[in-house]
Amino acid sequence: MSGAQTRATGDAFAAAAAADAFGDALAPSDARPGVLPSQFLHRAIAAGWIDAGDYAIPGSSVQPASLDLRLGEVAYRIRCSFLPDRDTVEHKVKGFIIDELDLRRDGAVLETNRPYLIPLIERLSLPEGVRGRTNPKSSTGRLDVFTRVITDHSYRFDEIAPGYHGGLYLEVVPLSFTIRVRQGLALNQLRLLSGRASLSDGELRALQARRPVLLRSGTPVPEADFATANGLFLSLDLRGDADGRVGYRAKSYAPLLELSQTDAFRPDDFWEPVHREEGDRIVLAPERFYLLLSDESVVVPPDLAAEMTAYDPTSGELRTHYAGFFDPGFGYDAEGSLQGSRAALEVRAHDVPFMIEHRQRVCKLTFEHMMAPPDKLYGRDIGSNYQGQVETLGKHFKRARPPTAAASAPVVDTGDQPGLFP
Image 1 (cartoon, rainbow, N blue to C red):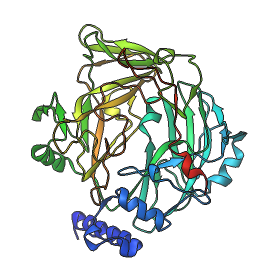
Image 2: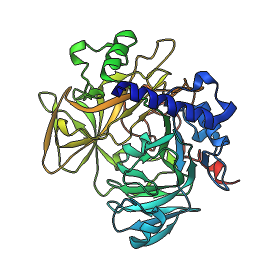
Image 3: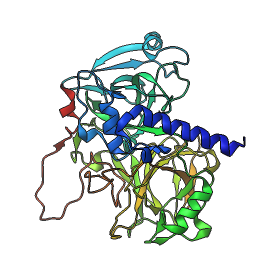
């Protein structure tokens, strides 16, 4: 049997196993490889694949192709990061705990450059043939909060083995800002997948020719600029606005940032603007955190999902993009009035100053098939924060308003709280 035939057989087996696990919840036509959409995630919760014990899982936690994962009631300050390998996380972490913080009520302060481990509210009981993958939420990455999920008996971060039964633990390291978090806050998201879901480079090129997923100024990018290598490359916009501003750099020694509040903090207290140099370039200071925008706009149609790779060693001594999930509907509009959305890129140079130029390729986007189109799309369907974005700052910061608009009080983000209690 050829390698392609083996993969196809494995995909069919995995999809059939997922369908069997759902029982009557999935029609035969649903049994195909891909990412589980929102309506199937609701069924997975009802079937007990995802459980929150005494806490309910609110409908607001279910996104078009992912589920928000919520912080539990305690955070452990640990002296180092680790992987459990053949052990459980609960047993192995005991040798690394320095302090225990209570996340209930007012929450706790997490200091910069210190690792914390937080048991999550949600637990998994996955059937064979269904695996998971986790990634920071977009707002988490834009705050330079490094997070990754750890599971029992695993030697990899953010990858959840098929058939996994057990708890989920989130490693959290604030890198630029001191933050306050509390129980029920969602910093990460989970995707469930069955079979081989990713599109090949050939499939990406065929897709771009048929219904473009990468645009520039409202038109498909030229074929010469459509660069692929196990994914689709994105480049930087370093021309910026009329004043030459291309993004922001995190300030040192900023005030405390309360992650449960949105539209609450003055950008100037946390960020300084970054302007281009002559030649449409900037020089990144080592170990400083930058928020920039992609030059291209991305369209994720309803039958696909996408994910940004965090680091590509071929593009230089820098890391780009913590927040990886792009839900179906990102940059998409059935009526055609929205012609893609640009991607916010979180960038950091390491060791030495690093020069980057306009349209330099710095990160990669991979596309995956959905098992079925979701019953709700990113954007107006779910009140998404970053559809059609032209600004890189996250939802926690005050947005510019017209002079006639009345000032409003900070908004407390309680979207996760209804599910905290049975």
